[in-house]
Image (cartoon, rainbow over all chains, first blue to last red; front, side, top):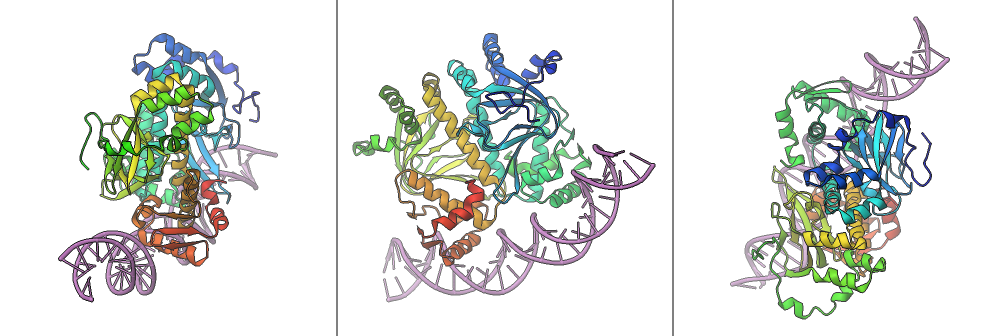
Length: 254
Length: 254
DNA sequence: AGCATTACTTGACCTGCGTCATGGCGACAA
DNA sequence: TTGTCGCCATGACGCAGGTCAAGTAATGCT
């Protein structure tokens, strides 16, 4: 949707969604921000202050953009529901997928340096977001050491993730690492670790893993033939999590 | 050197180096930290506070480690002189180079999440460092918005850099991007943009760019034959910066 | 329902880069 | 000087994964 709020690149909040927002506190307990605040033993008023500056955004639908490359940067966002894909289109018109962001995860951290988003972010399904004005968040972080620490940690983690993706691994290793990591991230948010739906197309996975879409198909087929997983269209069931983890181990470093 | 200061993984400061440290202020004006402080119009006392918590470390010599994977994390460091290579050894014993860090640049940002360094850092030549206790730096960042902002920016920038390296580019594109970026980073610190010395071995470049060392040789040869650069052992002269930048453009996004 | 569209799969073939093997050359020592 | 050692270059060859082409199946549109 092209609807924009003045002063931000985020689509307008659909007020209708606020009504059925009863499980907000439950969600927040699994969100990357307040998760840490709670873990740090931060008092309720701190968490309250964080909630004060949240804008709820959504629902966005498949294909809706959260922001586009070149949009003025002023906010990061936590994915509340759904999946967000970040990507760039290079000079030759090829798409490079930078990442997939699941509920509880943060988008926009790579935009802080520079005042425009360096990439696009698009919803892969129905997406709900918590938007945090970054200037406001920074000021709050100056007063709340736990929040500042959490921001540092989140960014540090993203550096590490990006570096491991950058490594030199075989197609099988990257595919296995992708599946295992997805499983772990879903499990961390309370979803099943062994049965889930791929919200992204094969071409997205391919662009993310620097493979051809055909190779993604073939590798998945091979993993299925080897009894490591079962896949039907976008539904995945991990059968042999152990050998998958072994295959992914050099990438994920564990 | 195995010499360690209690409570840190950084090698001990050689006091002899403090004596001839007259150009400290000049260096600091090009360092990633105080550079921003000055640019932000931060007052002298803030810069002074930053200087208060700096430990000067070095000189380290070629092959000396700044820290190793698994060392307890408690500090980040700015490279003051020389080149630092960060790398991991994967489960199969293969080395993966994560980055090269030139004077003015920061190492250790990917260690903030987790309390151990996730990689090794080794001096490629004679290296001098400014060591910043991270807990102390965090506290100071809470009081100095400019410092906090700079830390956020540095980390955000590293995410972006890691993601661009992760992309799917040809050997020529990656090599050109590597050379051009090196040139720009050196130029930003006051060195020549067109004539410089590669402080790293071909194998290091190869591991960084996910290429075979042989491919690095061949690509450099080709770039030389095409008149884009001249290279003799580790001395490089960029002759055709323009076409090099064109080749590197999709990677560097400009 | 019928058709178009998009996403995915599968097979055949091709190629960019890796691997292996060899040789050159500068640095350093004796 | 002469060896030797580490780093780098270069040629021959192989292969993982890309490209091209064709087919299938689910989904949306009219």
